[in-house]
Image 1 (tube, helix red, strand yellow):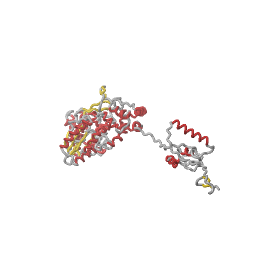
Image 2 (cartoon, helix red, strand yellow; image 1 turned 30 degrees about the vertical axis):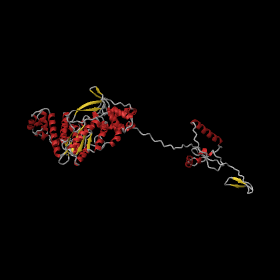
Image 3 (tube, rainbow, N blue to C red; image 1 turned 30 degrees about the horizontal axis):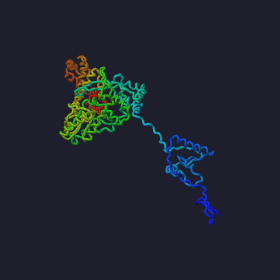
Image 4 (cartoon, one colour; image 1 turned 45 degrees about the horizontal axis):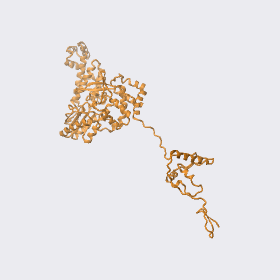
Length: 561
């Protein structure tokens, strides 16, 4: 009798008969994967022929979704009635793909999925040049340029004409910046006297359009470089000013560092070499067109009296971008001082080191002289660079007093203020008193008092106020160039006729007559206060700053011009 054994998938005869085994379905053993190195074209032809063969043999009607990747190839190789393992399970990569494949949906169209999932496309990052040439950035740059004011360049365009020009030519300006074809114009060279009359300072005045692009570049690259500057650098930086530098100097002196090494760099802005400066920029900026734009700005030629002067080094002192470039160039010097552990304060090219002995100060001065010359190719001004005490060497226009350790305006600062007042009075000799005080004199006084408010004493302020009122009375006296006019004005102010005529006939150049009792009675202190002159008691004198936009106002003559 024949019996069916499901475990062996065979037929067996009775016990008296010899065993006879019939294989109904041969088991297909998984073959070892073979690495066939076929040309790409031949492999693609084989794959297309397989797909075409399966497509021709597929019965009509909805078909189940084909498994992803290469699992469908394994299903076509073994017999559909075979009980052995499939070929797909023989390779671990295929097994992982089968386990992670989604379930097939009846009636769905076959989808060819790739082995790697595609990442979602991200927006292209905006380059620095695109940010510089953006409309919002150019508008902010235009507002800053109008606020700063300034003289026109060679083309004669004023800051009042800049907004209209920008609205008409914004597309052209943006295209030139992005294409790298923006070409700055030559700068106008102006020579001015230094505030201490020790020589002349060279100012460069770019055109208004070039200053606009200066501001646009400055607004974009400042957040890139400023966070990495030294905390002991205070000039031309956001949220930093000269008062913070003075307070840090006070702290150093209070800690016992009562010897100062004062360094003044000789022709600093005109001595900055271009290649080292561009290398400093290239450490954090990887856009060649932006670096080329900066190179064109700093190498723009000077023009004075029709003569063109090409420059191999130096940055134009007067361009809005130059202060940032100066800080970037001196950042290496700041980091070197920090590595040496030397306490210092730097405001632009005005540097003060604080040490505890005279010998250390002398050694530090010699070391600084060599380092600046070898590392940065900068020379120090030997006449202004020296060592001394904080109460003998001014820093940013202040002394640190020996008795109380407080700040006090240096005598040179008072002299510079008086020179500025004389200059304002001389330039506005024929201006009425209201306009003179409101538009010319008050901004100077507000700016000066705002900056020196840390150390002005009531006695010094009262002395200066008396000096100022005498000069205002003298200005009125000289404005009335005839005795008849002087007597008439004095009589109108309540002075008796005899006294008025006696003072009027004293002479035009008589200084005593200009500040005589008749003039003091006719024009007391309250008269000028009623005309708008700010006084030390005026709350607006110390809470507002309508003077120069960049403090300190008197110490650095370049800020006043």
